[in-house]
Length: 113
Image (cartoon, rainbow, N blue to C red):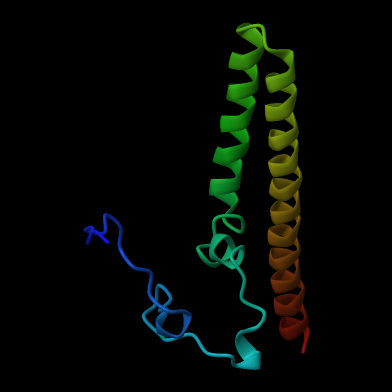
């Protein structure tokens, strides 16, 4: 039998796995709701009005570019992504408007008392 040098790293065991924040993962029931998609929401990118608007405009521009290059399928794909971000943008604007409206209503009620 020939002794060969391994060209790959050995993987750490699951119980030695550390998440990005440096804590050791455990089987705590409170951590069961964490999944791989939570990282996207944690950085606030889908809750930030300006980021959502910028992403929507990016997909609209990509759709225009794909259409001008003669690829209607890709253009439609980009338009569907832009539509998703447009709906999210409108939802965030509505929440922002409601929050401002509630503050104004609360302040006028306090002034009347």
